[in-house]
Amino acid sequence: MRVERVTVNGLGTAYRRAGDGPPLVLLHGFIQDSRYWRPQVEDLSHDFTVIAWDIPGCGQSSDPPESFGMGEYADCLAGFLEKIDLGPADIVGLSWGGILAQELYRRRPESVRSLVLADTYAGWKGSLSQEALEERIARCERDCVRPAADWVPSWMPELMTAGATEELRREVISMMSDFHPAGYLRMTLALADCDTRDVLPTIAVPTLLIWGEDDRRSPVNVGRAMCDRIPGARMVVVPNAGHLSSAEQPERFNMEVREFLRCGPGSDDQGGT
Image (cartoon, rainbow, N blue to C red; front, side):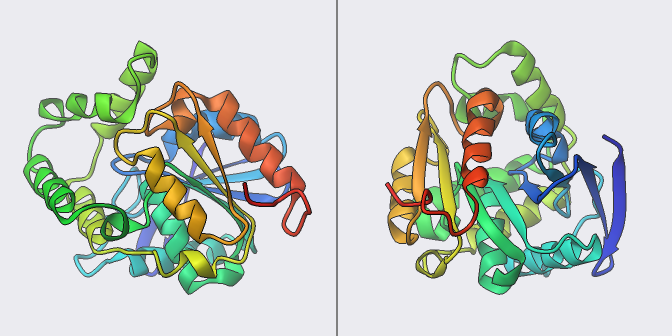
């Protein structure tokens, strides 16, 4: 996949595009970029037009200004979808990207056809204790000014299970080591100030939650609490997977996404469980 670029709200925005079919937008997580979605793009592009973007401050996209909060990220995403003339899309968001998907729905529900929320939160404010929230902010402020080699490897036990392949670990470390210091800090502060619990009961599109059974960053109980608040949502728990469930178990993840989208918005098969 070649990297394409557009300018949205004054920010250079990079993305990868593959396939032909209904639009499927992939939103990566914290300290990642569109490369994270390689297994999904390779597989799901057989059935969908798959768009994986680099969130501002990540990958090959420009760093956002200091004023950016989650609302501004969502407005940028909405502008991006309009810029590439995508129309209403199925949105898949992992972790940070899942919160962005919720905020996009809050501000531009007409741009969302369905939601897949994976290993995410109702914002850090909405899912974590104040103590945990402050610890995560302090960690970011400490790490974003240090060389990646000094701290990125220490994230791996939090992101993946002990059964993850060494190849996957190296791939994730390499990607995270390309982090933008300013983007990392901006994403952290936006996330720390976000609470989407009020959005969840308003979601009126088909919604699937996918969670790694061994997620240490956002445990399964966080997902169940979110699922209970979203009308008609259902949740799938993936064995042998941690926070990066789509990377550790890509075949299962892709199968669940494809089956969910095959049913289509409004299908009788989209009931909550």
